[in-house]
Length: 426
Ligand code: PLP
Image (cartoon, rainbow, N blue to C red):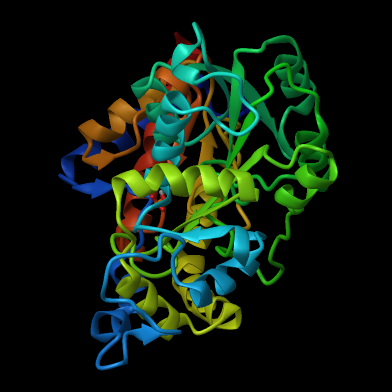
């Protein structure tokens, strides 16, 4: 999405700038830091906000509507919890499943089931095809790419724009290649560049003609409620748009409470057309006799309703905002006039994308690691770990404490100057 940064003219000579960066880097390395900017996970104080979950449901009766939640069954999950997340995820409650503790495992399962059993609208199993390919907007989420690699699904990168994936490219690829069976989308505050899809992008995804009859949009709305500003972004309703465009089975919607409540003990959701929901439920009934409904009850009692989710996310925002502000402040101050980097200013989600001069991301990550600041490996944001420009670095500000984050960011900017001026003088 970002263009290559262009180093600014400076009164100081390039060799002078490089010498200074070297001195700063030596001072940085001498400090023996041990800091980590890789982990896109909630900080302990964010988890503390959901501490009450640990004592729920208490002695609350675990029988609702005659169903004993302590027992097997209830493959669709707790109806009242599905009502709450119907609003958050823009899926009618009757078409939303509340499942285990992770949305990623639902994505995994959908791929496996599509490989091994015929999808609604499909003529054959994906495993029986010579070639299956997914479109991968880049930069993107490495775990999506890891799932494709795991199952031998070819990945075709598609450039991101500020409005979502480049839809001219997407429309062309899905129309001409019947092996293209899916696309990964993180439609709101995307991982890692914070992009939210425009209404036009959503409409085009819903109505585009695809050569494959069983094309699926893997709509990973992981950051649906994770706003950082006073003006939450609203995205268009993909499921409704697909139905209105005559492609009711096209959307697979995923979400979870991982970054709302407890990342390791939340609830994952899957939403889609009734045909898709029946397909997944039938397949999942072979692998489980029902989800953990007591954890779902815990979440229901804790969050109460969609307003409860909003209030809770306000508390999360109060903890996250100063960290994202610190990242912007330090990048502005330390790199703003160098022309060596551009970066995103996300309005939500968990990440900032830093773009450095082509050919420098790997060097920045290496320098930082040698000075004790661990960054996400360069390339992780691209299929097969290959960022052809070697320019993208993902920053995850949530987990470190604010003082640690500030130290790590200062260290990172020294490494960008070092690698950037080294390249300029090479
Ligand atoms: N999807 C995206 C885009 C993410 O960034 C993450 C976690 O970082 C996940 C899914 C993982 O979700 P879950 O914890 O529900 O498996």
